[in-house]
Image (cartoon, rainbow over all chains, first blue to last red; front, side, top):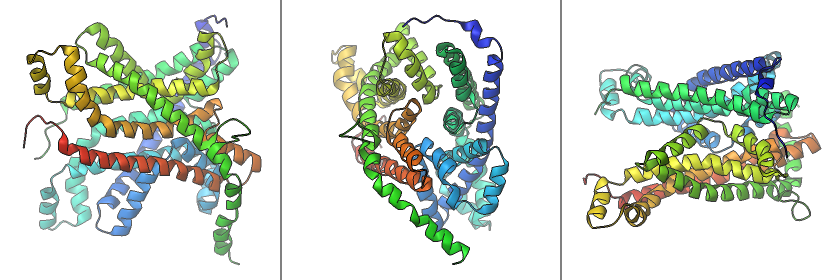
Amino acid sequence: MHYTFNWSLIFSGNYGQWFLDGLVITLQLSGLSIFFALLLGTLLTIMRLSDFKPLVWFSVGYIEFFRNTPLVVQIFFWYFGSDPILPDFFKQWLYQQNIEFATGVIALSTYTAAFIAEELRSGILSIPKTQLEASRATGLTFLQAMSYVILPQAFRIVIPPLISQFLNLIKNSSLAMTIGVMELTYMARQVEAHTFHGFEAFTVATLMYLSLSLLVSLGITQYNKKCLRVGYQ
Amino acid sequence: MDTFTTWFFGLFTNWPVVWKNFDYLLIGAYPQGPLGGLAMSIVMAVIGIFGAFWIGLAVGLMRLSRKKWLSWPALVYIEIIRGTPLLMVIFWFYFFAPILLGQAVPETHSAIAAFTVFTSAYVAEIVRAGVLAIPKGQTEAARSSGLSHTQTMMYIILPQALRNMIPSFVNQFVSLTKDTSLAMIINVNELTLSARHIYTRTMKAPMEIFLTIAVLYFIICWVLTAFSRKLERNMSRYQARNNAH
């Protein structure tokens, strides 16, 4: 098969703009998802570490199930199959939104939350138990001890692994194209379909993902160098 | 009946769609047609991890080398692959394998090649971490007893390091099993695409179908994860350490 490279074609017309639009959607998708994933992940961690057994079981079950099933299947479940189990008011709200984008955010954040919960848990467990005991002994409740003493310390330790979860999230957001969210990979596919120049289209998209990843991992290295102090022993 | 009861019983009415098509989920149209479904996912994952092990071992050892012309290409390879979504890698192989080879390539082959290349970057990091975790005294003792660098690697370091890496390999295999679901994007009939086939054919029971395949993936991945945790616990007892406690 004969293939001629044509790099200028990729940036001619609206194609350059398509890539940028896709990049923006990818960033929006990842940004919103990491926000909700952090909330849900923190909640799951608190449940996981509480003394009330049913909460612990729920949290463990959630984490194991979401970590051990593929994200694509979860996206399809939320997009095609979640209709019977979602409450009516939520469905009505959802149908007024951009449904693909909203489903993408739901799937990505519920998936990432399970991973974040595991990172947070190991962060919290690395805080010596005496910290919790001391704060309980000074009269704080479990929730107060968690939110004022343990979590602030744990969050600082888990920031590097959390950033790499964010990195995974950016890469995972490419799967949202399977339900038609117009993010970067989807746009690359569109440009390929319009120009028949897949090599160039996918190179541009790959470079965009790579520069995002490099930026983020640069962030981790800087953080490790400057901010990470030795933990409490 | 009130709304709740209708809704509740509605959750159970569509399951026959799943049971009637369950064999299609497991093996696709085989033996009348091509292999598909869960069997296809497992086949791809097993071939992928086998290829990725050897490439990853080579790349990981190159990365550890003191020679810049060996370690730099390995570093670049690892960083590029790890910074790119798997979907991109799959598209790369799907669109360029035919151009490079000058002939049509079956989607399954492109997918397996993509999985191998993608996973090998992660395996390389596992290998690197595994080798670095072996105490330096082992290398020094081996070198001072007269073994060459290659001999030290082959007979002293790697046997210990590889054994310690088994849990990580199992975890990587679990990831790959989940990742095989992405092959559906280039029309490989594995478990996820089989499920979509059933849904498009019947236009019924999406929740039941996708829940079923989620459970199928979960069973495989969870059993393997539990196995790797057990291995990790058992093996930590026999590991050579930097400082004896």
